[in-house]
Image (cartoon, rainbow over all chains, first blue to last red):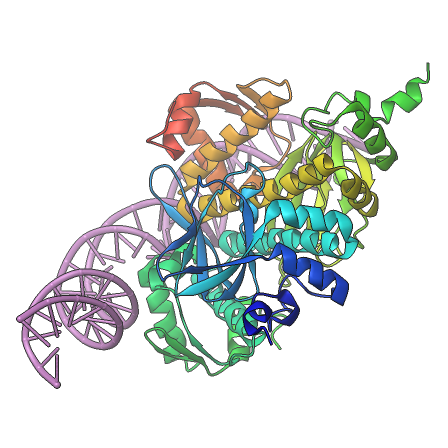
Length: 239
Length: 239
DNA sequence: CGAGTCATTGATCTGTCTCAATATTAGTGG
DNA sequence: CCACTAATATTGAGACAGATCAATGACTCG
């Protein structure tokens, strides 16, 4: 059995229920395997791509954890998202054929390289895949709208609560614990994402901890009262 | 001559250099005319679509001015963007087949209705159009990243300066003045978009006015020193 | 012309930032 | 294996940008 060639196939990737192959037939999956021809490893702290780089491909994260960030000309940096296994990054490059943000690995990572020309070609052939690509882009737009709501309307505690819940929810969908997380990012990166200073992030963690809602020890966080967290950023709809 | 039928055609729409038909051949344009079969008028204050509505179509704005906004379950509203002639709205609905935000006309408006299934069909036929649709979605993602940078990193003055410059730049691309604007939105809507309270918006307008950078009289704004505005939110790269 | 919406301005309050000191952890080389 | 260094995290005290509360003014539209 060609275990090597099996490895690089979407058709038996254990992320296929989260990633690109979602809802495809065997036939469509086989075609997709041709698109995802190569893999790429990125060491911790390294960039998968940087703002200004030529755009050629989308990337499906196989393992590892990324942040994407934009920076203004005067050096201010804004983290625009954190991405994990099964998520697609690189969409920002399509408009101008150049990437518009940096994608940095927060731990050693591996991605599947999907040349965008090939993605488009196979999309023309398979409406199901075409729709899926569109949904992925639209999902990113909807996510961004949620971040705007967070940045524009919420207070520090609400932001951090929303952040934690979103993180564990996504990790849970990947088979990890719903209550324990090892954060892959620094307080500064969390703060940048949430529009607050690292000291405020740290203080807010401590506050939650004092209130018995979570337990924190540096990067390790345990959620003791998920409902209390929900109530913080969404008082009406707390479960 | 069938002046009526000419009117509903992309092929002789005066927005075709800004909107969907960008860069298409005559043949492709003719096909696009079939997609854009209908128009719809929306009165001031009315919704083109609301969060939760079934998603069926994208909309190209022909005339008028829109805001899009999301609201959290506890009633907080965040304006996520202001859209004008030639811009495409509705992309948020693709992921879940339901719209995820409200699109409200800020003045009487008319849109071209583009059933998304038709857009996808013609995209499969014409790679140029397919790429264009992808670029439109990617452009929205990049725009959203810019808003995140604004909301996460900038102070009130910087936000308002960036907002004004962006607005006149887009109006200018549509043949309007680069220095005078009639704002179509209230101070509260500007504030919601920029993550600040309406009083702060008003005060910041007044401050710019005192400094001789702009002239303001309610909804009417004249930009006297565009470079000074640029310098506020981008000290390094001011023209 | 009158009622309602929207904008401006003032006075005060507060959440978050800033500056600063200390503590913890991870990484490095002897 | 341990000391040393650099990076990261926590915590405190004080300052400030923007929020809040409140009153007045301007415009719009039936």
